[in-house]
Image 1: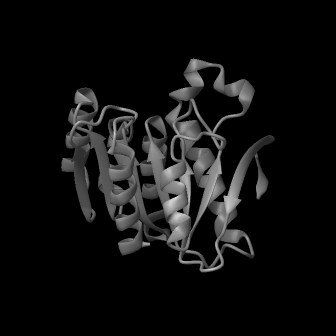
Image 2: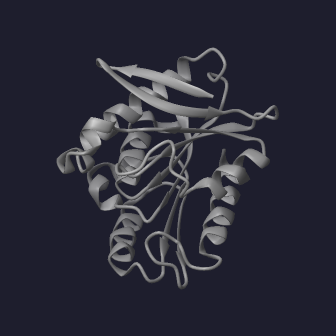
Image 3: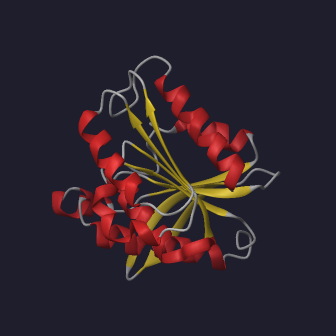
Length: 206
């Protein structure tokens, strides 16, 4: 279902899918260069839905905004928008009883972690992959949500960022390094492994 969320005179577009068996809702926080129509996480989306979890994909930036590089790394703005989208979910008559989780990618991971720090226990679980948690370093120790950091074994730069972030997290946490996977998890079996790790985490904590 196509939805539109108005935030400070900006209309953000999203796609909401809710299965009949409603265990919870996972909000996908895409890296700022992709959005609701991205196929990159389609396997994860389908598996979550198969297990009875709803999914919400939305664009952190409008089409015009995404063309400016400075917006893609404006973690403060991306976080504010994610907080507003989360507030919309918490107040929506059809969603307010749902347990909420975040699934973040790349720079979207920093926004997901920052928003999780803001919402506290209202966010039941967080998963990031190929993320830049170092961009949220100042708030990592405030996060209460069980947090899983996933990074490709061949994504060397991201491994160091994620190890630093893992050390600072004070919540239930886990760092998974997927052997042979690069940043986009395009290798044979890599996306399947990412999907398995993600669905297990949300099944356990959401």
